[in-house]
Amino acid sequence: MTRTQSLFVSLLIALVALSTNVSAQEVRDSVVKIFATYRGPDFGRPWTKLPPQELSGTGFVIEGDRILTNAHVVEQTNRIYVQPPNSADKLRAEVIGISQAMDLAVIRIRKDSERDEFHASHPHLEIADALPSIGSTVQAIGYPMGGEQVSITEGVVSRIEYADYNMDTQGLRIQVDAALNHGNSGGPVILDGKVTGVVFSGIEFAENIGYVIPSEEVHLFLEDIEDGSYDGQPRLYDARFQTCESDSLRDYLGLEREQTGIVYTRADDDSDLPLKHWDVLDRIGDYDIDNAGLVTSDDDLRLHWRYFIRELADDGSIPVTVIRDGEEVSLSLPVTNQRDDLVPWIGDGYPEYFIVGPMIFTPVRREHFYELYLGYGIVDGSPVGLRINDEREFEGEEYVVLAGPMLPHPITKGYEILGNPTIKSVNGEKVTSLAHLVELVRDNDESSIIFEFYDRSQETLVFNAQDLIDSTEEVLEDNSIRDQGSDRFMDIWEE
Image 1: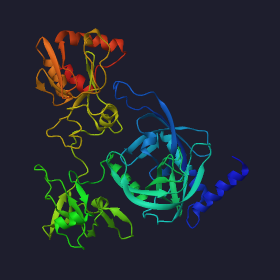
Image 2: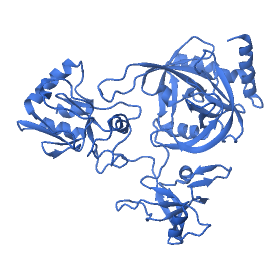
Image 3: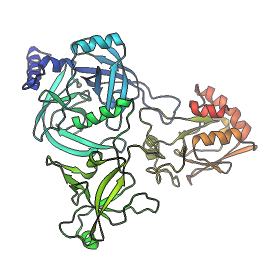
Image 4: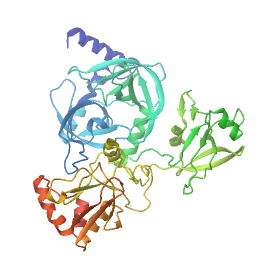
């Protein structure tokens, strides 16, 4: 960095601290560079992980001797290092709270002595309580690609909306026109000396469009992980609505011009919701919903109506008003932040598996659906796509797929695996989970063992039962696989 560039950075940092009690040096000293070794899941070979990939990002000090950053900077890593500003030291760190859904994580320096020494000279930044105003000028501080020193880019808050994050989760999102590049992720966005948000993404082929997680979402995340785990915000499940902008639809429903809202279109017999088909969701609490499903908030932001669920949720329900047959009806809708999903996310973990003979079985998780199923196309007949958003019908229910082609062995002669077929039955008994499949194979007393699949294009696999079991050790040895399966399945297998 030249002397002129250094002076420019110092000037920008000073501007960050104007009109506040935060000094320019405190802002600089609170922002760190993070190095991580990422080991992603290998869905086709679940006993191992993908080759290591070195990543870097940004973090900043928050109260409690912690460092806040993005989840995608530190997720599924086996090494994390924090480099203080203006230092060559790299301090080993660990994740103590993470939400991949909201792309936020908290880490801390592992050694007590290093942690105490670091935080004695690196003060925490204060996180703002209020959202920034549209048009506010903010500064993004971080360590983007292209240099080693801290970088500051300035931009304007151009949009605030309720948008999609990860894992079917929504939240507030700020759009800024500051240049945000790889390495900026996890860095603070400063307004009036306080953190107004956290950098988390940009648009690769668009100029000066970057996205920031606002301080409101940060506060909710930090409160949520106080008990050591992330539970998420309350949501309304199994409710499908459509906009009410069509004149023909409004005429059919007999709505007056001043009557606005969105139309409930799911009327399943097994739904626990007190809604009826063609109900018009008119208000959530006292907030009026327009025909596009948006609400104008007290600060004149137009936000999706679901944003207000977390504000209004009380003892597992929210108050709403619907228009039913021309009349207003007050209802209470159930909301929850946890449910027993049939196809949950793996999250920050790794896929489970069990190997018998040349076959690798794994429970279906949401990542499998996107990584494996969509890669090959959903095979004709598999029920996974149809039930991807369902709850479990009974405890432990899950679908099981073959993680990939069968491992090489003479016993596979004449058979072919197409994509990642979903197992239907073993010797005619329906498979309800991978644990159940392990039990069926373990307890089989027939001379043959037959694997049938839901997928109509997948042929049925028939093996000599003893030959299949005997081939397992050969397959494991030939492929340098240490463990036949995940711990919980091996406990069942060895009973």
